[in-house]
Length: 164
Image (cartoon, rainbow, N blue to C red; front, side, top):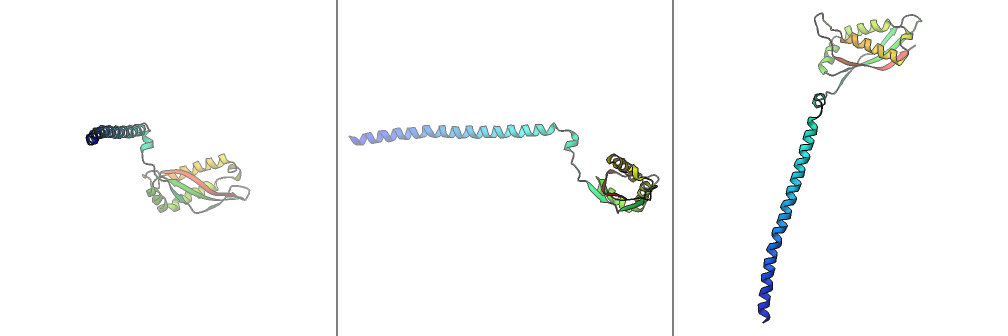
């Protein structure tokens, strides 16, 4: 009689196994759906936060181009003093660097005239140097030709500045 008991247990075991498998599959499917929804929500959130930025932030930023000029040594007005300075121009367009290099004698002449018109006491403080940088910027931006366009120079940087 022990023989009929064995098939009953195996029949119950066979019925129990299929009941577990659908639950396991259900949990896996639900888990995958949750992960996909979370990923989709995260992607949507980051995409929406990207649209909130200003137009200038989304525009590709250019790497600045630096053009170092040769050392300027000029006599200052009065007091037999001189100024020796190295100037670097910051540009946003490499083609501007080529245009300035092509007209370098004119650029140097303008800057030598400007620098030699200064007195030592006009170049002492940081504010004086900022003012001089703005004057240099104005001179460099002037068109090289009578009907030409102004140069697109972003900034003037002093790399050395010595008054003796």
